[in-house]
Picture 1 (cartoon, rainbow, N blue to C red):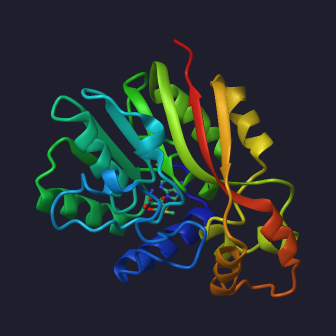
Picture 2: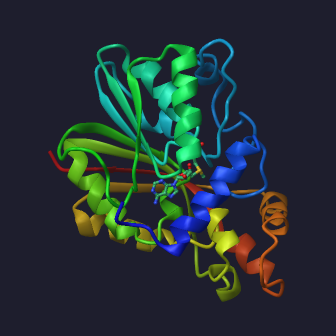
Length: 264
Ligand SMILES: C[S@@+](CC[C@H](N)C(=O)[O-])C[C@H]1O[C@@H](n2cnc3c(N)ncnc32)[C@H](O)[C@@H]1O
């Protein structure tokens, strides 16, 4: 693993604690499950019997991806595996799903759920999204749910996603971006970083980084958070610096649906 930084360590520790403590859904931060309301009912109905929607995401990349039978799908930061399980169902037995995550506790949970549910067309690999353990030009669709904002080197993530996608491949991502700058005190907080706030960049910069590595038809559609949700997220993060203008955060942070293509 080459991409390890103090930010990676803080993020890994945060998610290891969350999954160990079973603090899966309905957590306080921006990238935590707001129960199953992120997904439409008909998609939730495709979950295998007995599987609950354990999500730390901020959207529904599955609907955005429009997956087809037989496709190879890669999930960046697959967490407990929920989006991979949805994807595995949609691509069917002729398709294949790869989840990549850097947190051993998450991988353990995802692998044991796949085994228990008898899902055989999914595998979980340990690795960094900045240095993907995946062959070049082998993936039809890359999905990701509330993960790229956590990376301190987003340009590298986009370069890696571009590398592993087949020509004509699609990126379908739910992520946190901002409209305008965040207060400096928030940007400096590791807990706010792990909670998917401090690492979020302006949508125009996000788009710029994707286009710089070669993605085309980049589309970013905002899905705004309620002010109360952001408030409870910030309270719960116990930011090291308490004095900062919350109004600036309310204004700035939002979840977005993002799609882009590698030219054919
Ligand atoms: C907010 S959770 C989202 C998990 C999952 N996508 C979901 O929707 O439930 C972020 C996940 O990304 C992983 N992660 C964060 N940064 C990463 C990186 N740089 N490389 C690999 N995995 C990373 C974390 O370990 C964690 O499992």
